[in-house]
Image 1 (cartoon, one colour):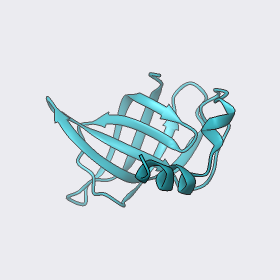
Image 2 (tube, helix red, strand yellow; image 1 turned 45 degrees about the vertical axis):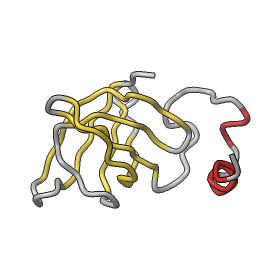
Image 3 (cartoon, one colour; image 1 turned 180 degrees about the vertical axis):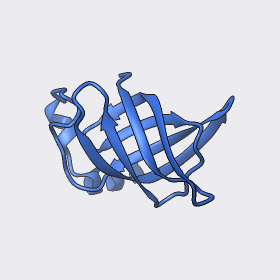
Length: 107
């Protein structure tokens, strides 16, 4: 679901950045976005929802492929925030992440 967001923080070379983008996907734990700014896995950034102006601190948990000048980045909320996206997710989306990870290894 594309949602307009603004990401800010410190890039991989120590420079401050702020970049507007749209989400590639969202879930109750965070989002997948595409950024020109280069980030380091494990670093923290600020995510602002452009429509609601809600802000959330996130951790970079995934560095994906580069497409053109942008790299796919997976962000995870550092604190639970079920109301951040303004979307009601299905009940099965609230399964413990630990259970999901353990379950995916059994397939």
